[in-house]
Length: 431
Image: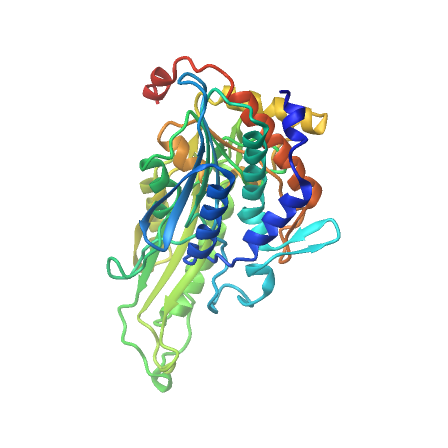
């Protein structure tokens, strides 16, 4: 049976139905259980060996397996995440967390609209339909084909809460899956790259900058005359000086640390994503404490303590008293020994599109995604998939791009999983 024979079994309408079905099960981060159960049942009905792999009962990952015919064929794991980034509850980040575009999906002409379609259940539907076509074809791959759907890729990290009160962390998702059996010779993370190949992605260094005043929390009538922002006894006001300095630092930081490689270019940006201070019920007191939360993207090999020192010098240079703490450390990684997978992806892309893969947008290699979890443990991983043309509020994928992704994913599996593996053990041991 040829690859074209398998591709002929990919049902475009069924792909659309599956994508809309799973994207209309709201799986806002922290609420993945319902879509997880749906996908578990779907995989079992198709004939895949299926496991739930999770630390928590209602936050589990899924692993489906199409066993290979032999013991020496290359194995491949496809990966996507079930969670979507916008919470159900109102917050101070999104203008309207209840908008249907965040929690549902629908068709508009040749477009499938919705956050979940783009990030990341649309590409998941594409590799699931591709794998089903291989299964239904009767063709036996030499190596195992694994299908994974994970939680918490878009989630947060514990910060100021007592241990155990914030049940969120990327450890719940791909990392937990990998350390509990989600292991293959290669990994393809199906996320948006505009069908370019990415095998290096940025890390995340998260810092808390705490500013403290040596003066009392002045009652408004007793507030001293204004001098400078940094000299204010009100730490919210003083934070304005710190924010300006951090913004200037961030502009230089991303230029100084650009990382270019065959697997993509990282432009490591930074931004202030949170601020805590004061009391909305008692705004007549000048806060003595203000905390800024800073997301700094990193490149492979970068030292988080060096960045911490830079931020500390920045604050002290303003004459402000404060401290900098690193509260989440996720380093960047670049895949090693990824060539067999990359070559299979390129061949599949050419067969599907009749052209070479385009360069991936720099943003797609400047973020943290689950390929870092695989590359960290020595499983060569890359990201490849359709990408929304617009990254504004209303995101969508064309039905054509989703169908093309399914065709390419099927070809990749047929190519790579029919190759004989040679020195996997030596390669993995070499790091």
